[in-house]
Image 1 (cartoon, rainbow, N blue to C red):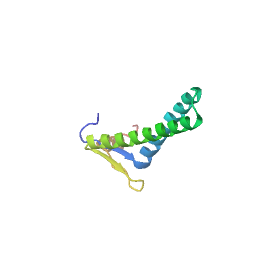
Image 2 (image 1 turned 135 degrees about the horizontal axis):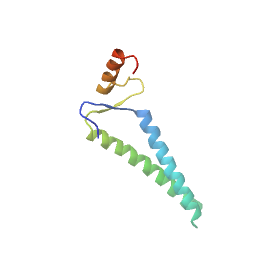
Image 3 (image 1 turned 60 degrees about the vertical axis):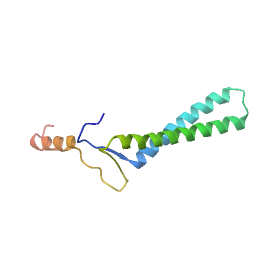
Length: 101
């Protein structure tokens, strides 16, 4: 759970890559399982594509729900710089005081 005052910074591209990898992995597992079963090739391919698409859609919707529930979170576009959190600012000030950190 996020602490008050901290920021969750994620790039849109990172979220899309994660969702795509998740969908491809689920689709691959489904394809392997369905190729073992005595079904027609069209049924196997259709089912695999539907599982892949449903996984991607579910992961994308859940990202939106998570960001809606966490008011301190932000999604930044690839051109923007991420905002520095309180922890990063404190650690930077400690590094300036003590060079051994």
